[in-house]
Structures are given as structure tokens and as C-alpha cells.
Length: 510
Image (cartoon, rainbow, N blue to C red; front, side, top):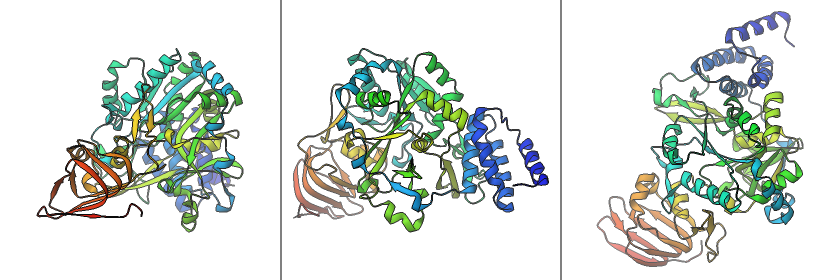
């Protein structure tokens, strides 16, 4: 407990911040402030300066945006971590699975389509692929971008079921203008925009003043959607239009479309929050896993795991349920939780080096909201509902004959490919950036019979080719190689700088 003098100083400090504590978004932040008071005097003083400078840097943003980021900053100073012994992994075998849903829940889903909205998270630039504009506008397959593919899927769904499930896009300052321009031919799309927060210096958490204006701010994580829905007034509009439920997913997840069974199951069981989870694979071992912490469903990210337990966390036979970041929420329940109780979301500290400045971006995962709903559930899904495109390697797979689009825009995997997760593809840095990748892969090789593909060097695909089994192509630095038309099976090609080619047979096994 603070003494009277300490309490007076605390109140004076809050007054200096000019915070409107009557605003619904500041409720949980006041709890974080009280937790800060229990920390060391040094931490308190450092936090006070950092919070004041954060709010100053966010002048002009909404109250909910300021509250959202202030809570992230408080938690960064407090650094609450779950106790490892309190963590209980959720077993996929013991969770409901989409394959077990009966016809009744599908009918329940159909009956409630007038109450559903689809929300896509569209704030990213795809910097990992060197994108210059919104990631949602990258062409991914059959001349469709992520955005056009999404509208194709939803339009086909609406026509099939004679309904009008609306599409909502949450943009950022990076993507809003270009997305709105693209959407001129889609008048029924609803747009909301998240805030921009200052990048902070690692250690002090003060806004970094050495960055250029363009690099000084960032969109602070998907979880801000919970606040933006309400602050923007969209929540009230949706409720007045008779909407009650939302399906939320990443714009780059090509498998995330409306599923009548999951939606009907949510309605029939009155579940406030459902997260789609898939069997964790080696490719997912560093991604978020769904667990129970003190008997409450929670999302555990790698950043929350003590270093001594990283190997255990990456054990996919123990932590089996992987968060696909597709969630379904009851909007009324969400509103009550956000405005009355306040959402408690673990802070994610994303460390980066930008313009030679070591900075940290404070964010929160939208899936972490699951821990705020005592009756939340997970729903197991197959990998066809989780097709994220994060790298050019993912594009290389999706754009091949491994996947096809049906008339509704839904991607389906080739039935004659025997590997559930393969082929395993490795691309060198020549393919890492989207423009370089598109230049080099002009005619996509067939991968339906491939198990392993390794490409290293300046390799160009300009003619039809078929890769079978295990194929390794290595081009010496300084050489350019255009792969001739034909079939390549269980072989390694080596091209020297002077253009000499060596081809040897290799085993189709690892």
C-alpha cells in the first residue's frame, strides 16, 4: 500500500498526464498503473517519463489508442510472465474438431448468416518480402491478390446462400489509402483504421527521436482491433444492423473463409470466443501455442517462455495446438468485456534495428484475447484452413500446381501429392524479395511430385519444368542459370561461374 504522501504524488502525476479516466478504454490501464506503484522507485520514475512521452508522441490519436499503448508500455515495465509450472498444454486429441461437426450445426450456421460479419486484418506491408505497398495487393495466384481473392470467396459464399455477409478491412496508415483506391469497385466493403504508435528505444522505452518521420511509427499489433471496433463507432452500427458475430483472420491466410459448421457450433453452444487451431508442425514450433494457465484457456507465445524452457515449448508432441489466428467472437460479449472488465493482453516486445537504431515495438496478439473469456473454446481444423503467405517460399508453393482454386475461390491441395506437409522448399536470398522472385519465376515449375526442392543462386524459370522427388539446383555466385524445359528427378545440378553444368543422381530420401 502507498502511504498518503505517495498516494498524493501518484494522483498529481496522473493529473499531469491529462488522462480522461471516464473513457471506457482507460479502466484496465488504471490497474496497470497501480501495479507499477508496487515496483521499484527507479522503475516508477522511468515509467512516468516514458508514459508522458508516449502520450505526447500520440497526440492526435484516439483515447482508446492512447490507452491501448499505455497499457502495453506499463506491462513492458512490469514484465509479468506466467509461471512455467502453471502451464498446461492443450491436446489436439481432446479438443473438438471440425471433422466431427454434425449437420445440425451447419444448419444453425445457415440460419444465422444475417448476424455474421467477416473482418480481415489488412495493416501489413509484407516487409519480410520487400513489398513496397500493402501486402494485400500482392498478386498470389491466377491474377488474384489477397484482397481480390478474399472478395471472390465472400461474394461466391453470399451468392450460394443468398445472403449478404459484409467484409470489414482493418487497415493501417501504411495500407489505408491504397486499399481504399483498390476498393473503389467494391462499394460494400467497410473500412476501419488502426492507430500508429511511436517506436521506442530499447531499454528506456522512450520514443526514438533519431528515426526519420517515415520510420518513427508503426501499427501496434492486430489486437488493437478490439478497441478500434468500439472507438470507431462501427460496433454500434453493426449491432443496430442486427449483427452479432464476427470471423476475424489475417488477409494473407488464403484458407480462412466462412465455415458454416464452426459458425453454427459457436451459435448453438453460445461460445463467446472460438480460436481455430491446427496440429503444430516443425514449421510452427516457434509460433503461438494454445495452453491452459491456471485452468484458463490462453495463448502462449515464444516471448513469454523462460529461456530454460524453450526446448520444451518447441516440442510439437507436447505443445500440439497451434494458433491459426482465425477467431470467431460474439460481438456483444466482446463489447461488455472490453468496456466493463477491460482486456488483459500480454505485451509482445518486438525488437528491431531500424536506421541503425535499436528499437522495440510494443504489440499484442489478437489471439491472446482468449484468456479474457472463461467459456472460450478452440476448434481443431485441417491445414487447408491455414495457408499463410509470409515469405516467397510460401508463394512458390501456393502458385504451383500443388494448389488449385475452385469456382468459389477456395484453395484445394492436389490430391495426387503424397506428402501432407511437403514438399520441403528452400530458396536462397536471390528469391527473398518479391520483385526478384517474380522476375525469376515467370513459368512456375510443377511441384506436385516433388518432396524436397533446394534452389541456391541466380536461377531463372522461363520454360515449363517438372520437379520430381528431391531436386537440388546450385549456381555458383556470379553465374546466371535458366533451367531448360524438361523433367528433373532425384538429381543435383551444379552450375559453375563459367557456365559448366554437372548433374548427378541423388537419393529421394533425406
